[in-house]
Length: 319
Ligand code: UDP
Image 1 (spheres, rainbow, N blue to C red):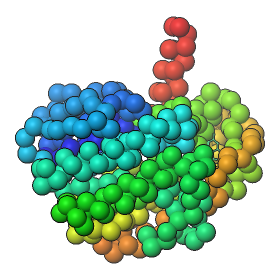
Image 2 (tube, helix red, strand yellow):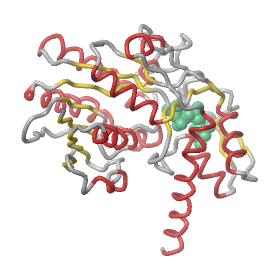
Image 3 (cartoon, rainbow, N blue to C red):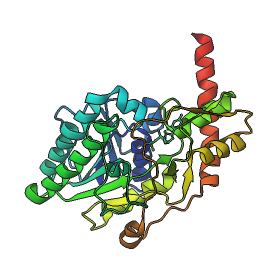
């Protein structure tokens, strides 16, 4: 296959580039570097079958040659990023997704859209199944992301129903691993950074809110299988093992051997209180479930964050 991956220089996008290339496919990564990074794909610059196109997909684009699949992974994705980039986030979910769909339509390519557990909002159903319609504040501080992703799902379904595009939708739950940005504001990179620097670990609110963290290699395997499957309706991909944010902070302190203390900060508005995917559908239709435990995944991620912290220290000294 020859696949186009929008957001190919992002955290998940770049891991997808690696996976497709390792399985003998060709990859065209498209990225504007708004939140993605050249460092995430630098190792691929001389890989056969890899091409990079620097482009902001909110403007129309084309890709020369055959395209068999378009994977739409371009978007700011951390709460801190999308609050800084509100209009950009809405545009990439709407105009950006449509431009990617138009490319798929033109090339008669399969289209896979990266959606999110945020479409469920602060969920009243727990764990979240794909049939749940969600509980989202349309004007709240997360609305630019949640509603862009909900609109994008509607747009993808409309292109499937009326424009004949063969589509897939994955709803991604919290995912972690190397290539997350150290300072993207999300709990996991933030806690690693704080623990490794010996700073206080900032837990928002009482820390009893829950999340379920999936290691990136598990997630991309699920996405790869979904693309090949016949499933046309959304599928949850994530790790169903749920923990509190306070527990995550403690595990990272223990793993890093840090002397940091947990401090509590004001809770975020509209912060989902609980989140855990029901993955029965992914198990049934994709024969997929995560294999990497949190203990293994966090240990695999630690060296990456150590290096990032060391680099940011050097950078600060130089400036
Ligand atoms: N969080 C926290 N301290 C931080 C960053 C995040 O306690 O420094 C909390 C946040 O309020 C949320 C959870 O950790 O309840 C997960 O947040 P994250 O930004 O990782 O992603 P989300 O799942 O909310 O998209």
